[in-house]
Length: 411
Ligand code: RFL
Image (cartoon, rainbow, N blue to C red; front, side):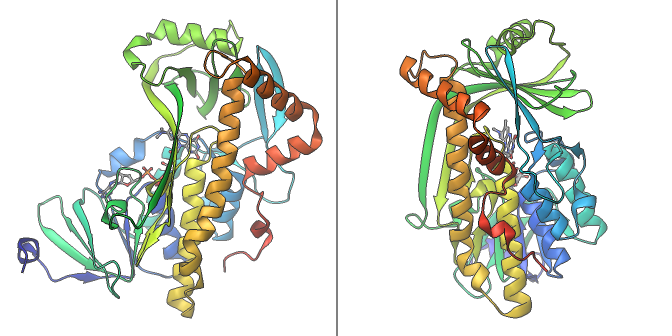
């Protein structure tokens, strides 16, 4: 008998699914499973307050809004305001409005910051009697290829607990423990470093009329709404730059120059960090009864706003697959989970990569050269003038670009 087993203060509990992580992926899985009448336990390392304030994504894309709608959850878990379907691409100070709505019937994208989605998903799950355990540390996964895997963890009081289950949802992000529970050699990582850094700044300052992405010779910049009087800004910078090198004055100067808006209203900066643009896919996304969901399986460069939306896509497929397996003894969804997720993931990686290259190469040519700059400007020109190019862009932005979206909705 190992020390950890001897320490167990109670005999193991039992549930159908243990969900590791209470970010957008884990909380969506938990809410959908509850809607499907399937029991689960969510284990989250952090406190509720910490998880509820983590600010990242800002838009829930059309496909994801309709996904929540199809489960009857949209009104409860989506906050914010409807996105008006217009995106501004500003090139050397000149505005171009492009549609990121595909005109199809049904609810459309919402400006719903990630922390608002997380807060609402948490509240809905707990209101419905869901089992969500914060400050669960030392989580470890066992017997993943057996009939009943076990998840062990430590409570905030230091007690060691164990839960046996039919399935584990690894929703613990890029730095979680789920992926590392898979033996070496099973998963193949496909990684790409874009060689680009972004300074990201959150400020109490007026949001733009439309989400705004700007190309300029001084480098890429962006301005996104995050609330009635909150904005997130991005500034291209060297990947190894230090946030301390960006004083408030330098941030606002660079934004005014790159956005071509000398009158841009500034405000108190509440958060500032620098990160490298990188992309990563792990294939397959399952091992035995463990299924990786969201950032635990893949990272997308933020351009195009796909990371959180992909997490919501995986969560939907996983929850439907478990529902079918548990209630109809049909394991097709579980067997095909990884392949179906990866099809969309590679599609969105390609879209994000295309946008990243185009909007950086068209501006500061010091990295990619003048030839690439010419190509990127030609891509922008096509986007602004060709109805077909504009239509493809809208479909990709909404997430409605796959034939399967026309298929039957979850029951
Ligand atoms: P998360 O959000 O990282 O949540 C994982 C959860 O697991 C917990 N955890 C553990 N729990 C128990 N035991 C352990 N050992 C654990 N280890 C970790 C963590 O505490 C956490 O609560 O992953 P999830 O749920 O897959 O969600 C993914 C999204 O967060 C992510 O894809 C997006 O934030 C990406 N992203 C964006 N996505 C968009 O769709 N649109 C955007 O505009 C957008 N902007 C961004 C972004 C990511 C950014 N960062 C992180 C670089 C902007 C930025 C700056």
